[in-house]
Length: 382
Ligand SMILES: Cc1cc2nc3c(=O)[nH]c(=O)nc-3n(C[C@H](O)[C@H](O)[C@H](O)COP(=O)(O)OP(=O)(O)OC[C@H]3O[C@@H](n4cnc5c(N)ncnc54)[C@H](O)[C@@H]3O)c2cc1C
Image (cartoon, rainbow, N blue to C red; front, top):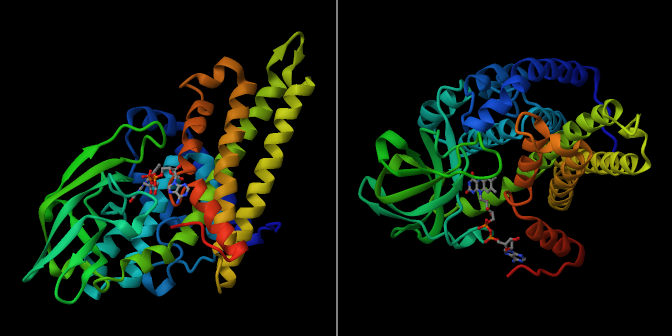
C-alpha cells in the first residue's frame, strides 16, 4: 500500500518537520545522555495532534484518522524514539480513560493529561509475567471503600516520572474471583515504591520498577468494570503495534538519511565512500527495508481505519518494521565507521533505540505466532 499524503497531511507533516528540526533534534542527545525528558515539549506538540489527537473533537481531540496518526508516529520516530515512546504511553492512557473513565475520572485524570499537566504510565509486566499477560499476579483485594494492591511491575515506561498510572491487577472480591482489572493509582495518594532502571534503549523514557505493598487505592479509582481488563488491553494492542512500527520506520529513515549524506561527503582512497559498490549495497539494502516497512505500516493503518479487524496487518507491520529498523541502524553504523559509535553523533543513539522495538507490544516471536495462527488457523501459543 503506497501512502500518498493529502494536501492537508502534507502541510501538517511540513510543520511537524520544522518543529522537530528546531526544537527536538538539538536536545535529544543531551536528554538521552542525562536520562531526562523535556516534558514541556508535550504541551507544544498538542497543536499537531500528538496529544489526544485521535479523540473526537467534543472530547478535546482532532478526530484524526489512522493514516494521519501513522504519519505523526513516523515523524516522531524520525526525530527521537524516546519522544515517540512517551507520546505512545501518554496517548495509551488518554484512550483508555476516554473509553472507560467515569465523568469524575475524566475530569481528574484525562483533562490534565490532555493539557500536559499530569504524567502517566500503564503497568502490566511483572518480574514473572511478560508475554503471558493473562498470568498477571499482582492482586487487588477489595476492603470496603478501597482496594489493597500487592505485587511488582517491571519495565514500566514513564514509571519514574509519572504522578499516576493505570495498573492491571487480579481482583479478588465476591463479584469477581481472579479476573484482571484496571486501577488508576496516584503516586501521592496511594504510595508505591519507584525504582528507576537504567536500560540500554530509550533512555529518556523514565523506565522503572514499581512496588505495591499493601497499597491502598480508593474504590472510585477502579477503571471500567472489575474483571474486564484483559479484553480491553488486548483490544488496544493492534493500534499500539501500528504506532511502534511507524516509529521504527521514522528512525530507520533518519539513519538512512544520515548515511546517504555521510556516504556522499566522507572520502577515502581519494573518492567519496558512496562510490564504492559495497557501500552502495548497504545503502540500497537499507532503502529497501525502509520502503517495505513503511508500506506495511501504512497498510496496517489503512486496515485499522477500515475497521473489521487488523490483527494480521498490525502484527506483520510491527514484526517487520522493528526488526528492519535495527538492521538499517546496524548498516548505518557500519557505513559511518568509528564515528558511528560516538555519543556525539545520532547514529549511536538510533542504533540502541531501534533495538528497543522488537520486545515491547509483543515480541517478534509472539508476533510470528499471531500471524501464524491467523494464516493457518492453528495456535502455537499456549
Ligand atoms: C522499551 C520497553 C518498554 C516497555 N514498556 C512497558 C510498559 O510501559 N508497561 C508494561 O507493562 N511493560 C512494558 N514493557 C515490558 C514488555 O511489555 C515486555 O518486555 C514484553 O511483554 C516481553 O516480556 P519479557 O521481557 O518478560 O520477555 P518474556 O515474555 O519472558 O520472553 C522472553 C523470550 O521468550 C520468548 N517467548 C515468550 N513466550 C514465547 C512463546 N509462547 N513462543 C515463543 N517465544 C516466546 C520471547 O519472544 C522472548 O524472546 C516494556 C519493554 C520494553 C523493552
